[in-house]
Amino acid sequence: MTATSAKGRRTLAKTGLIIGLTLGGLFAGLPVLWMLSTSFKANGEVFQNPPRLTTENFSFDAYTEILGNGAQLRFFLNSYIVAIAVTLLTLLVAVLASYAFSRFTFPFAKTINAVIVSVQAVPPITLVIPYFGLVVALGLYNTYPGLILTHMVFTLPYAIIMMTAYFNTLPKELDESVKVDGGNSWTALWRILVPISVPGLIAVGVYTFMISWNEYLFALALTRTDDMRTVPIGIQLLMGQHSYEWNQMMAMSILGSIPVLVLFLIFQRRFIGGLTSGAVKA
Amino acid sequence: MTSLTVEKPPPAEPEAPTRTTKNLARRLVPFGYLSPTVVLIVVLMVVPIIMVISYSFRDNVIVQENSVFAGFANYTEVLTDPDFTAALKNTFIFITVSMVAHLLLGLAFAMMLNSGLLSGVTKAIFRVVYVLPWLFTIAVIAVIWRLLLDPAGVVNYVLQTLGIVQDGVNWLGDPGSALWVVTFVNIWSGYPFFMISLLAGLQGIPGELYEAASVDGANPWQKFWNVTIPQLRPVIISMAVLDLIWTSQQFALIWMMTGGGPLNSTEMLSTFTYKLAFSEYEFATASASAVIVLLLTMILAFFYVRQQRER
Image 1 (cartoon, each protein chain N blue to C red):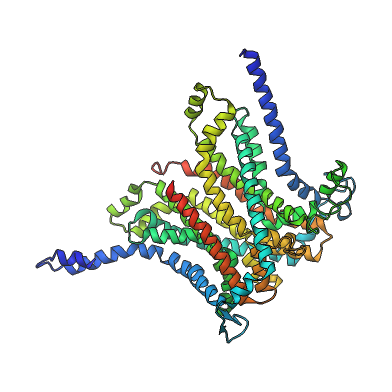
Image 2: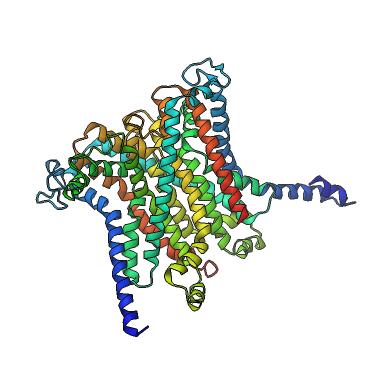
């Protein structure tokens, strides 16, 4: 073939690719853009015909309405309390377990690991019924501890798997050097391994936070009063109460998504830099 | 542990017992680190599963004090309920269509993002856009699509303008369309996870394989079928099974978009079970349904594990 036809074919492929990417981008991005635009509209404009992505009456009214409402703010407070507590507890428990899996050989290691992995396959709908019986019996129904505890069934297995993989990438000589100096495994873990694992801990922590922040089924079944509801349930309650105030519902949705969106951007940066950064050099 | 001390009797060594104790203590160290996890797994999984199985064979559970043994009555009730059969059928359609679409969209987007024809910045921007649906909680996704699919909403406007539909269609209120619409929204929200995994898989394929194929005179289509797909096979199979498990567990999306309606047309095993328990307070029957869902999932998980071992 001649050079020009090869070049022509390349241009053609590139054009096709850009068209494909743009169509895909519209499929993925337009609904999100529409949500954003609706949150800045006056409610009367939401279903205007023909629909427009822009508005002349651009306003933050929907946002100030949500942020000025104590009941809505409570949903955010609850979600922050639960998700942060779940993240810290999950990290603590997962670091201890991952240390055992990564640095020790012991009987039943494979069996215990298999059980932890298989937790992920257990359907939440199967667990929510006994959880209801359990949290009522323990007096944890409609409380933070009830939600925090039950969320950990999802967050812990993933955190242990990720953290074990992370510890496995760090050379054993690092923490064993502490033992040569007379320290035990506990000091080796907290003095050496945990400080150099900060990028891994952040990645696992962000993922844990996302799972807890987005959890819906347990938050729905294990709380009763509005002052204990989390953001996903709050969005649903708002939909029931003000099903015609779409601008407020979109504003609430965006406010409820910001923590995860922001964390994801940090997570991406940490993920690329963190996993490869030299542990031995530190 | 004991056999060690018996085989090597340390005669006339006073520190011997302490050494054995130390040895035992050292063996227990990893279990010390694991103990919080083990306690949580027992409290959060082992005990609840025993509880739900026990509930499923009794009557008057949770809401009343004196439960009675009911044998398989709860199971018979669930399995003969036409709503359960409908839920099973809907769940099957929902899972199958979602999985196929997740795989095809994820693969198409991953291959476009992996192309060498574009600059890194362009690809990075599109990657963020493509990942967007994955970053929103299901509650937000349900609300966005309820807005878009409203009879007066923008989806109907576009379809009317293009002449595809006549009047505004009530997508979620029509039993004929509701299942396909919730499946579509599930596809929208779930493909990015496939895309990310497949993109990582594509980047891991050695370039020499494509060079060798070029030397053999393969065209792009042949390279795709004979190099790309075989290399991605392990990722595809793993993702497919995980997606099968996740999609079968999807509750929030259905609950917030249709609540299982209209006329059970979007009822899934999860919403059926939830309604029995928390709307009708039939905890015993709901437990039987939950155990059936668990058994179905265990069958899927079994095939997953077996397939992973075969690799």
